Image (cartoon, rainbow, N blue to C red; front, side, top):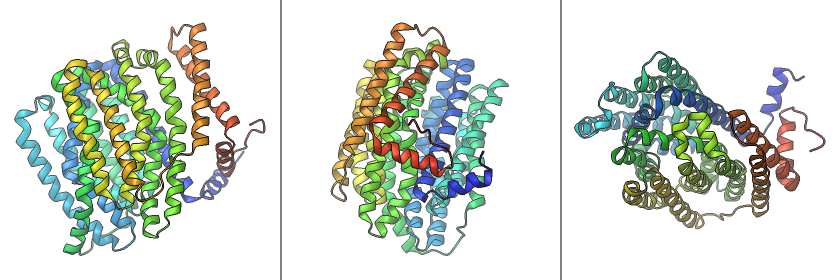
Length: 492
């Protein structure tokens, strides 16, 4: 048995990118799994409509928080990560964030009469409070992230979500409904901000118009690109709430949340690689960037592909048993959104690379064009096809965004996927699909335990086939496990 100190020694011996990726991945998996379990409880207790009201709150928070950030969060991370005049850029960012908060709250209050979804249960008050706390959380989080403390930033995010989930569960149990969910969300933001603040070494310093100008030049395009991301993430929710009902919003959001399991590694890699690529670009190590991005595609697909394939086969049963019979009607939406997450691997990592390479304008061109496509398709498809139309619009949007981002990124660096490992991932996922389909044909999925057994069986088959067919992935995973001090099975 390994002692804690020896385990820590092994862990710290891993190279920084791998170590921070592991922290990021572990954090992402932990908080997502905790979120899944809590959401199952919420949906069973509150139902589709109440959960839909909470989803609409999150959509409005995302939109007005974007106004309050103005793209300066990403710009601050970029400038701070470059290593020059960090305190000056941090202070300029802090001042700008406070001014933009006032603008976002003013816009919210001006639009209050037109936003019926925020009436009742004190939602407007909670939204304003969330925006204020979001400034504190965003400033501290971007500060430590820009300093390269990816593990701290991820740990702060983990604490944010754990506090949020714990308080939400208690509040729902006590009967506070949607207001309890929102209150827990705000408390989590504050807890994550406090944690990041403890590790923040940046300090206030006098800044000049040059610092503001450098932040503004970069943030303008980050803001516009972020606007596109907000469209992908929230406008479909708002439009479903407008054309349909809160219950439909609830079904759509549960299906979307379920697909985020496919994005574990994508999110972890994006978080880890952004400051690294930014620094490598500043040091002119373009070859390192090319290799890291190509490998990132492989490791993101490593999870996204099998989750999508498994979800297509078992999605309806998983929704039924996990969230309730009313949510099983979202199976078709789930199938489309799982494919969205596969495309998201390329869109997410390529736009991240463009921003890290100091090409935010090109990132905006990709995301902005896709955002316009998304809005047009949402307006055309939601009234006729319902929530399935929103999912189709998102899929087309992601394809457009990924294609344009690849076009611009390929002008800066060589962009490619590792064909051998990708083929092996598809082969392993195909073998998994055949086994799971055979299981379903022989054993009716009449209870949650039989469904979970199918999930475990499929995951086992996928992992074994992949490790046997791809020696490169096998060796990397083996080396990583050994570095952690864990014995690697000889039969593998």
